Structures are given as structure tokens and as C-alpha cells.
Image (cartoon, rainbow, N blue to C red; front, side, top):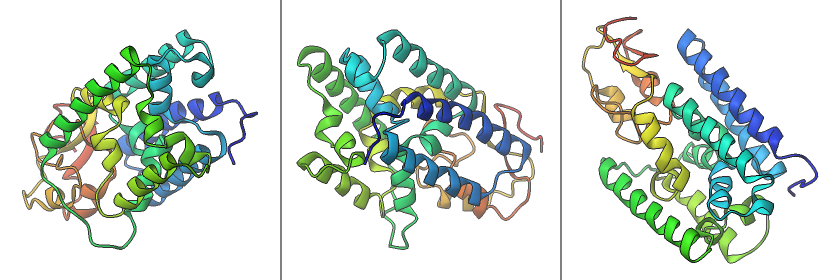
Length: 261
């Protein structure tokens, strides 16, 4: 179903613009969950229509030095992925949360009304992904093997019936009950973006209006809603804000600006 004749740069530009749009909406207080659904559907559709902006795959092709798979010169890929990394360092993981089709299909699936599996093992998740990242680098640099191809990301969005596409389809089914398993355990580019988000300039923070009811903590699917959490695994899904009973207690603002509303 993917239209290869349409430039993949369209999807990448969409992803970059979306980061700024989302940051503005969150910072100005104009964010609404309906808008989130709209962006998720658009991003997922772009994955199936033009296979972009599937940045995890592009990152892998860059590491493999596969110009054809990357869809452009290596230097262009380096610049593009570096821009996303820098924007994450400023605004947080909006790209992972809403622009990446891989994340979008998992987020949509998680909204399915089925029992959820809650996990508070954030550090364990990150440790597993770090290990997978090392394996990914070894496979790419020394064996020239594509880890993400084994997970069927490309085949899934191309609607190709292969063992790989079935594997990722099972990941999507798992994400109905378990929040973003691929993003949190496998994605090699997400591992890099989590470090950037840990030090991001703007993030969700509690203000002095917080009554410490901890409803946001119970609502957060990645255990990143505690006051002192680093937000490395915050995908800005907004569930904490929806659960908060006190207006202005949770705001998207400059880091360490506690107490301001």
C-alpha cells in the first residue's frame, strides 16, 4: 500500500512541524485530547501510505550505511536525526509520542477497552532497551544485520505478509494491554531520545497548586509522573493531566520553574 513515488521527506517535515505545534499547544494550555487523536491517526496513516516518518528504521539504515534504504545521502540522514534529537532535548518526546508511526499505532491500540497490565519497573524497562541497543549496534556494525527488519516494521507498514510483519502485529496486539512495548523495550533510536528527554528544557511539572493526591502517578503508564521523575520515558500522552483534579497543578513549562502556574 505504501506509495514509494511520494518523497519520504514529506513525512519527516510533518514530524518536525508537529513537534513545534504540539509544544505550542501544550505550553499555551490549548492542548486537547481530541487533537492528540487527530495527530496519532495522521501519523499512523503516513506510516502506511509513505512509510514516514518512521525514524527508528531510518536510524537503523543510517547505522548500516544503507543509502538506498535510508532514501537519501547519509549526511542528510545524520542531519535529520540530529535535529529530532536536539528538538527532543528542548521540548521532550513529542516525536515519539505523536509523530512516529510506530509509536502512533501502539498508542492507538492501547486505547482499546481491555484490561491493562500496569508496570512500575521503569528502570528495568530502560535496562532491557539499553541491552537491546548494544545488540543492535553489534548486529549493524559487525554483522550488517537489520534488527528492526526481524521485528517486521517495514513489512508491517507495507502490508506484506511475512514472519516479520506477523511479529510486529503481535507487538501491536500486546500494546493493547501493555503500554508501548516496542518503544520502551526495543526501539534503538528511542533509547537515544530518552537520554535527551531526561534533560529536556520543557516538560510536565507540578506547581504549588498540587495537593499530592497522586492520581497522576496512578494514571501514568510509564511511571514518570512523580514530582522528581526525570521524564525520560514521558511520551506526553496527557493521562496525568486528565486524572488531576486540581486545575493548574500540572503544567508544561520550563524545567525547574516550580511554583509557577
